[in-house]
Amino acid sequence: MQGPPWRWCWGRKGPGRRPKPRHIWFRPPRVVFIPFTHHGERIEAEPVHIRPDELEALRLVYLEGLTQEEAAKRMNISRGTLWRALASGRRKIVEALVNIRPIVIESGEPGSIENNQQNPNP
Image 1: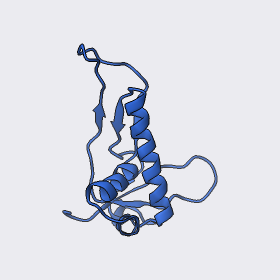
Image 2: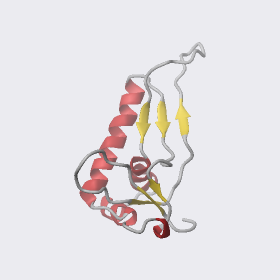
Image 3: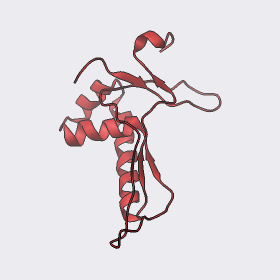
Image 4: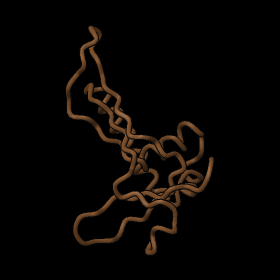
């Protein structure tokens, strides 16, 4: 881990509770994985979008081998919220693989909160 984590949350629409920012240590660029046929032809389909918090949850639990409790503490969220992010990320990846759809890993720029100094009301 290098430097402080960046905080990310998505914008909500309408009334309700403000989303709690997640601490994300791995900041991916926006990447698109595009499926091709065995003849090398690009498959055009509606892409599946993976949010930064889903990718971070998958990375911490499956790549780094942390428990859900440890990963939730690292992301500054509850274990239940981490479980939902894991379930959503797994579902999206399986949906893309089974239905042969592109996978878009979002960079988190819209709605991202860089460090605590830029967010006076966390």
